Length: 351
Image 1 (cartoon, rainbow, N blue to C red):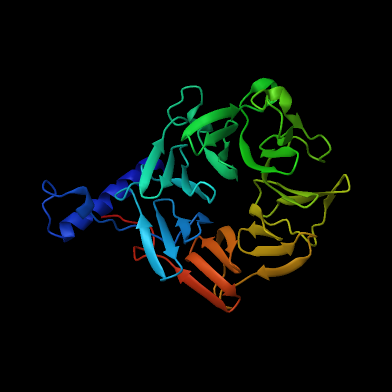
Image 2: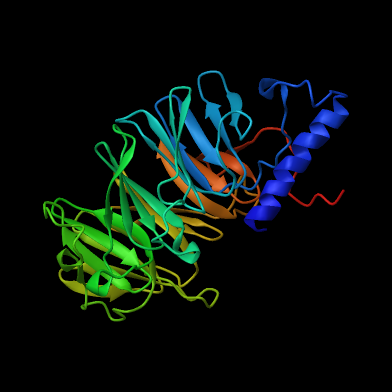
């Protein structure tokens, strides 16, 4: 469903709420409006010290563990747009970052929303390039992997502090993911893996970025990258279903082990504390930092099959954004709770 259809869907549900409530829309205040949105299809999950935030394409809801309450954030309550691509929380800055698929950005600090339209309003970026693929937080900065390069957002000043065009000769390059270690950045792009030194003062200059030619397919598209100890994991994306390939760098050599790492579609890879989470389309591998498999999440409560989008781990609990079951709180294989606000199952509204 495109952006226009999203907007029409939101408007339809708001109008429907007013009609059912028998309220005169000319006299209504914004805080009296209600929305009726689907919450079972989720795309991204993140956590603050108090809440677990989960995003659908249309809105956000958050779960407060201390009292098991579920609350919503929608356009009525302050979001500036629909079509959410990613959310991330900077605990250092106590800020929720909401990245929309059209490159619109919201920052939520306390109860205050700050809308940033720098990228979406730029005439130097084509409409096709205006995408935000992933988020990375380092200190007070958020690094946005975008359809044209890398955008550095200063969370304290609430402004774009830099933009890196890392393609050949400074051209725009679709950056799909970004990781770092003690010395370097590693960017997974639609045209290979690029590296640069963290302390390079000229990261905005394309000459600071070098393509890794040691990979067996240096010009391929890589949609995810993660760093575990001295190992670098990258996923070579394939448009053919079930043909992704995971590589990992060990002792200077790129290794492929399709028996241990299936060629199924990989959506994202994350290193959280001392574990690696490899999110496949319909299951999740949990591994230690030596790549030993700890478990595979095949089912919820031995019954439901996952359709995973994203994952985090907080306090020994795995939280999964699922495309069918909302936010999944997984304590064990047979101890999963499905969390989502009331709402329609999907967006298939016809009249």
